[in-house]
Amino acid sequence: MKEKEIILGIDVSKASLDICILINNQTELRRIKNNTKTIKSFISKVLKQNQGFRIVVCMENTGYYYWPCLEAFEGIEMDLFVVNPLHLKNSMGLVRGKTDSIDATRIAKFILLHKENLKQTLIPRKQIRVMQALLAQRNRLVETKKKFSVPTAELVFIADKELSKKVEQSSKKIIKQIETQIIAVEAQLNELIANDEDLKQQYQFITSVQGVGKVLAWTMLVKTNEFKSINNPRKLACYAGVVPFEFKSGTSIYKRPRVSFMADKTLKKLLHLSALRVIQLKGELQTYYQRKVSEGKNKMLVLNAIRNKLVARICSTINNKKMYEINLHLS
Image 1 (cartoon, rainbow, N blue to C red):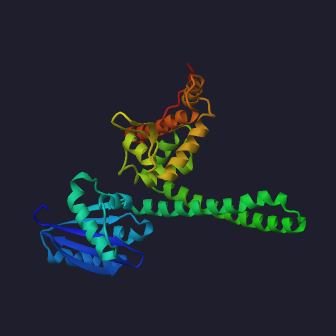
Image 2 (cartoon, helix red, strand yellow):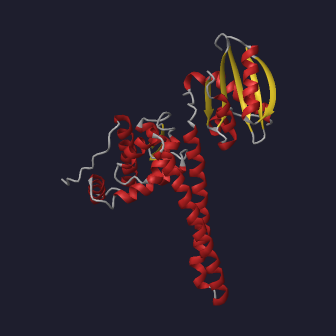
Image 3 (tube, helix red, strand yellow):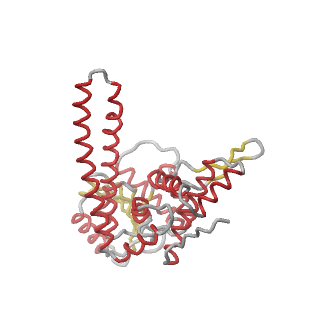
């Protein structure tokens, strides 16, 4: 451990934070309330008691539960690492026992060993956190709409036509209300982007790529933290789970390259839908798809290649700060 460095391993729950303070291999355990005011007060005391020390903070990505920490950490100089819970779990090997305080200690020791090989987390701006909350709300509304739409379509099989009609009318009324709420949430997202020049410009760049719609653009902005956390096409494609990896060992074990199950499923799904859309539109990617399929290539493999191309084009527009120019010339 570097000289004058204090490690804070934080186990986050809805109501409280269990914190392991690690200094010179000495640990101290604390529990505080999970709210911005309490966290700020705690950090201020730690800094005051350990003047000249650099703070290194590590915690798991727990969705909304760690947002108070992000708000409290804004403006404080520290090394912040928000890690995937699966990464932590796989790094611990065989373990016995589990409590919040034990988890906090394990998190502190994990970052002590691995911080040199991990990328620090950049705290998203408030606008991005608001976008994330609005997108989550929209996704919940869309899923709820599906739950009412499918049974409504199946009512034709119910023998009691009067009952069928009543259920259908009730479901359609609920669906209409949900659609109204979805429109309202999307209007908030559009307004937020329109009032922020950086987001507005990036949104225009992303949607200039043929086949990329508003939902994928919103999701890209949130998942990449305005492309501050990820702007490399290869890394973004890996994050989205569209990059095939080899699986072989020695001379007896070999499987054809396949995408990893460790992926952001939401982003992967949206990229797939965009790939399906773009092959229906006149342009380079439609021509590419048709040529590869005519050569006998597996359709899903070709679609995955198109997903990668979409990621590459999106990153290109962002990194070059230039709208994507569609080439309609078919050779």
